[in-house]
Amino acid sequence: MSSFKSIDPTPCHASAHPIEHSSTVAFSIHDTDSESPSTVTVAQITTRHLKRLASSASDFLDFSDAQKSALSDAAKEAGVEVLQFIHEPVAALLAYDARNPETATKDRIVVIADFGGIRSDVVVVASRGGMYSVLATAHDYDLGGSSLDEVLIEHAAKEFLKKNKSAKDPRENERSLAKLKLEAEAAKKALSIGASANFSIESLVDGIDFSLAVNRTRFEILASKVFASFTRLVESAVQKADLDPLAIDEVILSGGSSHTPKIAKGLQSHFPESCAVIAPATESTAINPSELAARGAAIQASLIAEFEREDIEQSTHPMVTVTPHLSSAIGVLCSSKSGEEVFQPLIEPETPVPIRRTAQIPAPKEGGDVLVKLCEGVREVKVTKPAPKPKTNGATVADAGSDSEDEGSDDEEEETREKVWKAGSVIAEAGVKGVKKGGKVEVQVNVSVDLSVTLVVREVGGKGGVRGDIEKPETVENGRV
Image (cartoon, rainbow, N blue to C red; front, side):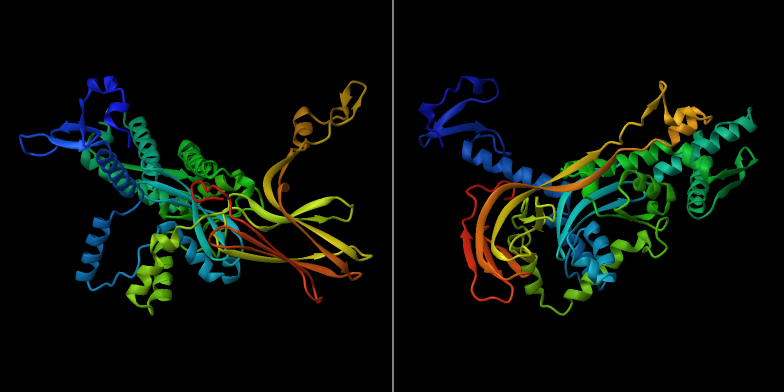
């Protein structure tokens, strides 16, 4: 900390007067009920500020310790034992992974979109060998199923006033508005499973009965802005994770509003065909979105119920759960059939350490010495534009016939986008001599807790091999290497 004599106190006089205290900078402030001021050093003020930031972040992102304690006490009084607190999106992902254990062990990036009644939350999670890492989150506290209800309420109220021009606006009367809300929610649920729904309200305003039929197409047009907001929220979460939609392997819809088919269809059009959008509207085997979080929490409870409470608390301590992650992929350069070097990723980015991966690389057909290059990998998006159509006598082939311009435009090919890997900087090189004809070379990469890398290269079925250690990087930012 700087001494008092080494600073220029002039800028501070506008808000507070710095004073010298124990050869350092301090301020005299009234922060208690006492009439006498307190002397607080810059270090103490910084500590207070950081504690406040940490408390605010905890309150915003998750339950605070006081809230968790209160919830635990309430559960205990109700006869329910609390084993662990887990995030709702993680619980939703766990519900699906428990049903498909083979999928759970694969490396993939999943978006969990929780569309609730009054708010929406989106989380991007990297699943690496059954370990979950949250990459980004996005929240909208005003977007949810109630937004869709409002659309139907507005539409019904306008239709009522058209039919009854001298009647009062039902939205201005609390009782009438409550009836509209109840009927709009029922219509929304009916449109989630059927092609049409009916409003039927007795004595909506001044004894006037009201009935209205709404089909799904009309509903989707009326609520187009709300559906677009759902998609934009998911897009923002993916962008915050610094990812392209092509990098997403699955999108899981959670929450009651996820029953609405248009939400899933909108996300299907945004993500590539290789990305599975899991919702009742897209998969008949999808788990009920309203039960996902509860089901995942129950599965987690069944897994840890046999452990001692002390062991559970130790395993969920931040020192255990908050670990460094790899920001870049690690892989090897392999020779393709055309003779070009192709990057083959062994460890995907956003993988927590420690981690070990093993791969086998075919040696040249004639055998001989094999050089293995361990490199960082960069994920890029390759855009391929369609070749222009040849022109005949000033017109394209598509326009030469009798087809209309609209028909010609429908046949136009769209540009294609695909995810590709490119090799970055070389981390290490290792050579294996005298590999047999048609043999294979095994490459093992081990990234330890201290972020150092161990590379082992040997011939499959052979004796000996090459082992090398790469020291950990000098800097680690934001828990990533």
